[in-house]
Image (cartoon, rainbow, N blue to C red; front, side):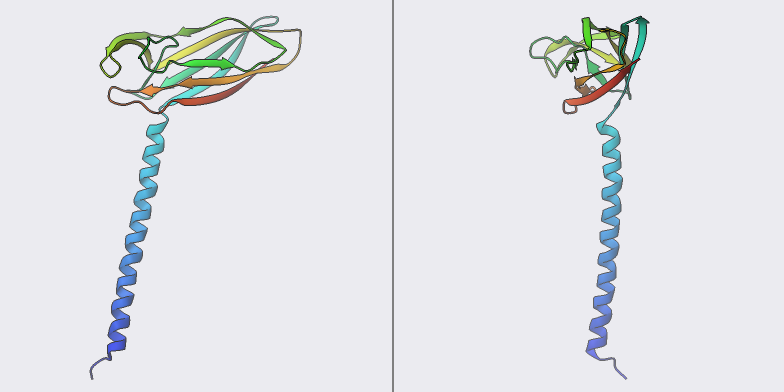
Length: 170
């Protein structure tokens, strides 16, 4: 007895649908795995934000960055034509005054960067950005702001990034 063409056609169609579902599932899995790898590479900087009380109404705000190797960020001062410098901006708070400039604490490296054609200052592994702030009166408040930075390695730079922060002063 010869199977009818309808059964053969159904068998072939079912087999092809199964192959297509397997292909879609495999493609979806690869897409998810690739996205996970991209997410790890796209944020090689871990930021922490703390405040240390130094006197009755005086605090040191410490903005710390730790980098995955071989990534680095640039100093707050870069030459014209160079990379985007790290910039820390504090939001206005009528109870807080910023005292002086943000200090960089870490091992600064200086080298000629062929990509930019200038000598650049940067930090690898870690850096602390320290800002002294004073609170007006004996009140609980916070200091908030944004860190603008660009992360690079020897062959590429990631797009400039903004990291918002808010730190309690108590």
